[in-house]
Image (cartoon, rainbow, N blue to C red):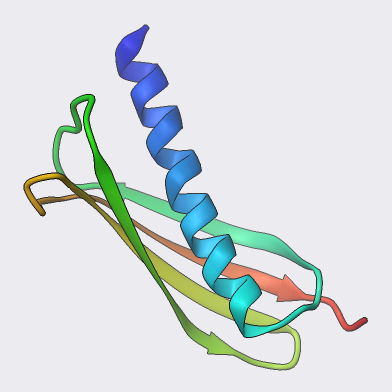
Length: 88
């Protein structure tokens, strides 16, 4: 129901935030090796803000993390991801 739909929506927002940040660092194609999500608090329908950081990019591996906050600036979820970067 609504609870599962909200979690799916939050997961997509985090994935997009991480992917968008990685794309600003390079133009190569990449694949997700691992994506870890931590739900920190209950999330109710409303406005959410995502912030992502690329922690490190090597020749073939990248690592990024993100945080998702609600409209009250409370952290509701965090994610980290490891990516395989392919050369062009």
